[in-house]
Length: 488
Image 1 (cartoon, one colour):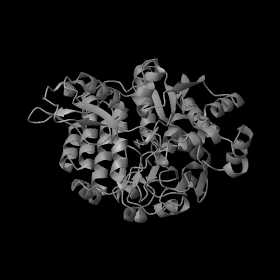
Image 2 (tube, one colour; image 1 turned 135 degrees about the horizontal axis):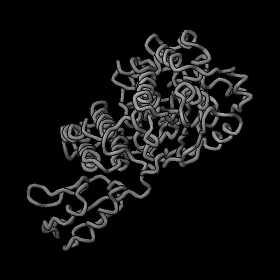
Image 3 (cartoon, helix red, strand yellow; image 1 turned 60 degrees about the horizontal axis):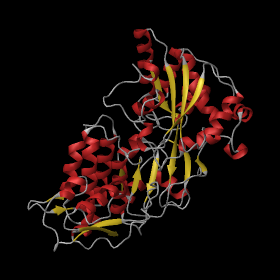
Image 4 (tube, helix red, strand yellow; image 1 turned 180 degrees about the horizontal axis):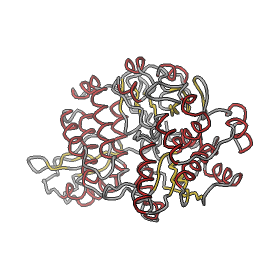
């Protein structure tokens, strides 16, 4: 499976809310939007705060931060600094397996604009900034929606590089401010100083859309769907081994097996919940789980950004996981130690464990070295993903440890850009030529290390694409011509 370039179909389990009107209108222009959802009125800050608290709205981008706390933090910061705020909508969706925000952009853009307008009015904001990825999916739809209506404050659309870390809050603010689209080197709160150094309310497209739904329904009717802890609906992106890739809307608390059955997911070795910063669960756990943060946590999973990637029985689950860890290591900003050195170490450790060349303790140690130490959440999310794979696929890991492996090829089911590698290559060492000069380890230390005897040691797995150039240089500098790159 390769990365999609078109928006997948949409389905609904139960009553549709964000996806209401899709079946009748396809894309909702302003007239259809008002017919389906009805009018909406501006709200004062206290009313919007009460609504966000009443529906217990949490950010839908992955972290699950309470939206009311963000609102309050921005209001307090504006009062303290006597500055106007900026409202930012994150619709970049940089994770390859996620499609829910792009569905809203392309088919219900006015819901996003409603939510942003509500926040801007309540906060007396200076401007609204809408961020989309440079794959441009949904951008034209959003621009068309802006032409159909008047926003309460000046509103602009900013294009962001389609990278995994580009949608991180600090990276997004940096990009809007004309800086590189990477997280800042130090942690800072956008509610204190964000776009143009003004207090900034930043949340993702689905979060603003849910606020627009709740503003029309009120907290009691909004809570008619969902659970007591998590009222309302959830948008899910289902890809991987599913026969029907789709974005599905369902009430929180819906049994996960209903979603898997709807998308015709075959039983397999495991299911990734929450995306590349999420966690793996077994098929047995999936059959007991409910679609909610609490329900998935009970079986060892996470809701995250609403991403579900099941694997089929005919692929190597550890190999699939290793590809993702390599990708995440390559997607780092490379500006702090845990990302620049720690994530390549973690990718190498996973490769070694999968190849049977090292015990799982090597992965645990590498993950522990980056956990809680990054300038953003990328190292934490990557280590969580890797450790979860080692745990859920423990039986497969035993087979790999014997050197025999599981006997299955890596089919590339994780939706990675360009996955699987169309031209995998691996390093080969001619021991009859190697004199242990160690130059290769200095050229590409992220893949080649020197063992206790001073000779090069590296995983027998393909060289990650992001280290291919370094591996080629290592081959060229070897004075004894002992190294070569061959087709894997």
